[in-house]
Image 1 (cartoon, helix red, strand yellow):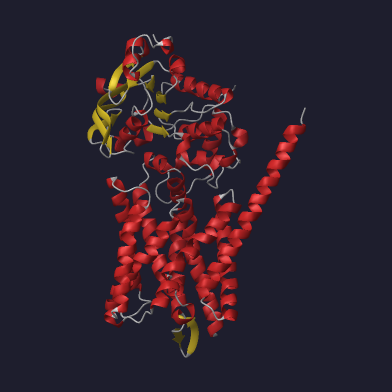
Image 2 (cartoon, rainbow over the protein chains, first blue to last red; image 1 turned 135 degrees about the horizontal axis):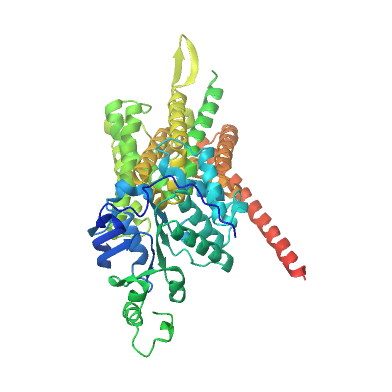
Length: 268
Length: 294
């Protein structure tokens, strides 16, 4: 597959950290979140070095999506603060891109694929301006990068699950961020879409971008991620996959008793 | 301007002013919130009358619209407490405000001359009674110009913030992650809906205004795959419905808002049935194609 790079304009050059602090793409300290009386995350410390693909892995209800949302200010945390490239989010928002779960929106919305992808440019438009030729050209480039330029004028309701994920990925690529948060990008997709998304991940890694993926398929964690955080309401382990993605840590995170671990064969 | 022409124009302008914000109300799945607002503004209107002594006063409209905003912000706050589920929080707030308004009306507070019938379904002919006369020439009902101003404000708001409204409606969390003030935009939009509903109160009353806001957009939603198309269809349906409803009511000597609502309802039902039938035929053709392919 040919991959067209979109022009990256925002952000500082990668790999020239001014201090050890900025070598982190993002970090959060003492992050606690509760939905009503139910605690979801307890005092989570989490840090992602620049240039890695970090997988957030854990059982259902472990708070994986909540961790991302709380860091991005979409869910209000009880305690804790997050930093992106050593600064609060308000200062670095343009360098941070978010790809929500594709099930979070109404796909019957009367709009086209190109329109949705163009929404990725809205952050740079100010209150009143509408997207023009330049914004649409960037959107087309992003659609080419995810391999679906032919779907540009489709109504979004006509897409398959994998195509929806690729539209959401393209919308995030349009922002040209340095740090990507992707919530379950491989959820409910076909082999072809999976290939397309993996190829984009490889390109991003080559460009020195940082990617944080919420992922729940243990079998493919090692294929996509070089760093892993095992999460179950608290951080069980976090770091390079070889050190963190071990049988013992997975067992702890998934609360599996010894002997019942047939599914642990992919661990380090 | 003749009385009939003036009142027809009033019906058309009111229908458009209500239907255009209705597009985003429907897409945001906030339809019943409009009902809550239209009930909640009643005490605001009565109290506003105490100060303004004129039901068409812009001050009264803005003041009463604030009462509508109490429902919007109050029910959002109640939902956030997590003590209530679904739209129960709306159900708690707006009946209290509406009943307060009804009590004020029946006590003849401030000598407000609203009969309960007009409160429920409005009275377009009564609303159009006071004519704007400049230089001895009648320029149509004063109320027509109030609704025209509301329509222009709505057009300006939707036009200026079109992109932002679209992205916050489609995917509010993504919009927030872009740095767009989704909450602020939502409050501003809901205030505008509240103003529109208050202004249309004279014409459509507390119960039927929801039909003017929601039904044209809901019908257009069934027929469109693009937002600009949906907006154009909404406007078309609103104007047609206003004209048809007005004349039906005129001939039958019934309430205009009721005539318009019934017409909207009929159009919606026809479109719903037609789109369902077409979908089924498409599905049958596709199944046949799949079954007959080797």
